[in-house]
Amino acid sequence: DEEVKRKARLMRNRESAQLSRQRKKAYVDDLEERVRTLNATVAELNNTVSLISAEN
Image 1 (cartoon, one colour):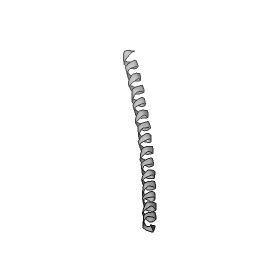
Image 2 (cartoon, one colour):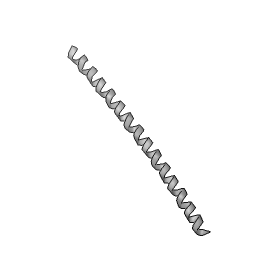
Image 3 (cartoon, rainbow, N blue to C red):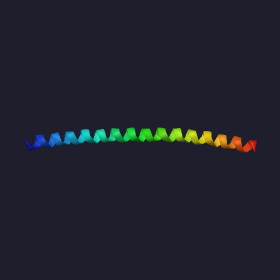
Image 4 (cartoon, one colour):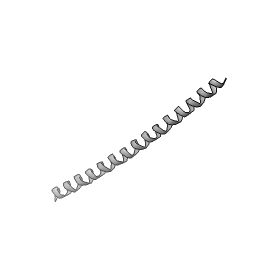
């Protein structure tokens, strides 16, 4: 009985840990995508600044 409970608890814990890892990966993937987008925006804005500066 105790062994069955222990195995069930271990299984729940494994599933919970796996879910946690999946959520963390999704969060990190989202942050990395946001970084790529923001870096592209910064590069675009820097080009715009350079063009405007060259005109003056």
